[in-house]
Structure formats: C-alpha cells, structure tokens
Picture 1 (tube, rainbow, N blue to C red):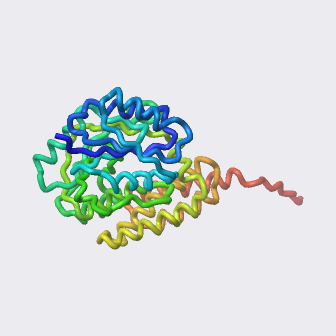
Picture 2 (picture 1 turned 30 degrees about the vertical axis):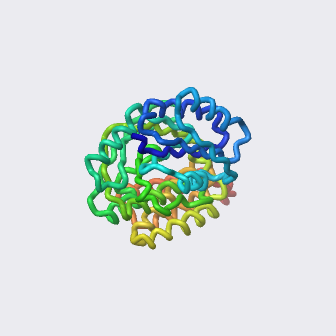
Picture 3 (picture 1 turned 135 degrees about the horizontal axis):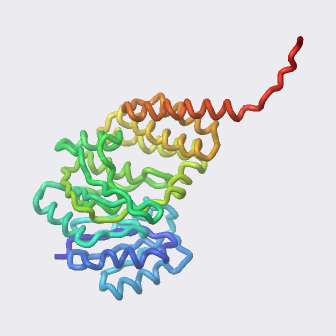
Length: 312
C-alpha cells in the first residue's frame, strides 16, 4: 500500500541526493511520492535526483523553489502531500532499510498515534556514533511538548519521525531561523499528538560540527532574538513560559560555548549571562558555572601585564 509522502528539501545537493534516494529505494512499496524541493540550487540537484529516481523506480516530483531556507522549503512540500503519512528527511542523510515499515507497523499497533518516533544513528564528520533511542515520552500531549522543549526527553531528528498528514494539518516550520526550527515544529505537533515509539533505528543523521557551530557564530544576537520571538509563540499551543525560558537557556549556553571556543569572549560572556539566568537542570547549572570560571581565567591570562615600578 502506498501510504507515505516523503519530503526532501535540497539546496545544492547534487553530491548527496542520489545516495539519499537510494537509501529509500527498499521502501518503494510503501512510498506513494517523493517530493524534492529544489531550493535555489545552482548545481544540477534536480537532474541528478530525476536520474536516480528513474533508476530506482521512485515516484519523484521536483518542486522548484526560491526559499533559501530549509523550513520554508519543507513547507512548500507539506502544502502538497497526498498520502496519509509524511516522512521528512534531509538531502544529505540516509534512511535505513526497513525503517519506514517499522514506523508504519507501530502506527498499526497504536492506531490513535499521529506521530511515530524511531531511533536514529548519529554520524559525526563521517564517523558513526551512538544510536539515539526515543525515551521519556508520556501519554499526556502537553507534558511531552513541554519536556521536549526543555530537553528533558531525547530530541528527534528530521528523518526519524513519521507524522500523519491529519496531525500536521496547517502546522508549518518556522521560516527564516538559523537554527532550531525543527524543534519548534515537533513541539507544536507534540502538543496535540498521541505518540508511539520504536527502538529500531530508521535513519542516519549526518552531523558536521563546524557547520552546526557556524549557525551560532554569525550575527549571534540578532539570530537569537529572532529565534526567541518564534519560540515564544509556542505559548499559543499551551506550552508554559517556564519551559520556553529553559529552552532559551539551553540555546544560549550552546552559543556561549561556540564563541568561547572561537575566542570571542565578550559574546560568550553575554550569552552565558542569559543561560545562567534561565531555569535549568543541575547539569546545565554546572556547565554554566564551569564556563564562567573558564572565561574568568582566560580573561585574566590574556590581560596585558602591567610592569610595576618598585620604589625602595
């Protein structure tokens, strides 16, 4: 049965898109369409995708777009999906054989669930790391959404979730954010979703530490304020402000750590202050304290030495 619409945003992904599509080929029996959003690519992403899909017998539709934004590109496809289940994956990630079937089986086992969460493997700079198994989810929708925003339960990856088209409805990814747009999208879905989980890994999430850190390094204050403004809109789906403030602290700490590592101590100090003021778990409180101490030591060591003229 063709039950799944696959959504792939792609910008200059000619080098990886054929491999991503090939990883989906074993699930062709359940895939009704693959919507590739070719977002302002200047390479031959669309041609490579069409050629690969033809060879793999995947039902590809290329949707041209000029979003220059991953969230907005996903939204283009979400407005056009035709099948009851939606699976999102990025153009440089890999689906694991049998993953979609595992998610669909869990949906059959729990027919009230609108969001099925699978495990995934992290691959950092080409090196396989640990498998992340979903845990900590509860029956209560808002409790899950709040805990997810706060980081109390394991985050999901784009590519590890199967969501019903009915659940998604008019919900869309925030547009124009440098980071965390997927967290805000999943939190909105969780606020009304009945969840099901499977421990089977369903995808490989490719992580580039340098690229991830760059998101926090460019225009950090402006980008943080834009993100925080969007984060605060989650109050309209019932997520408490206290949970959102905790999220602000987590993100501020990430930004501080990146700038500390890159030697921008003034920006690091500003974001550490935000992180320190936010509600947090003990582990984050310790990280804040540790970085503030490291920052103070580093400032002291880098301060210009003043030679004192002794007077006898």
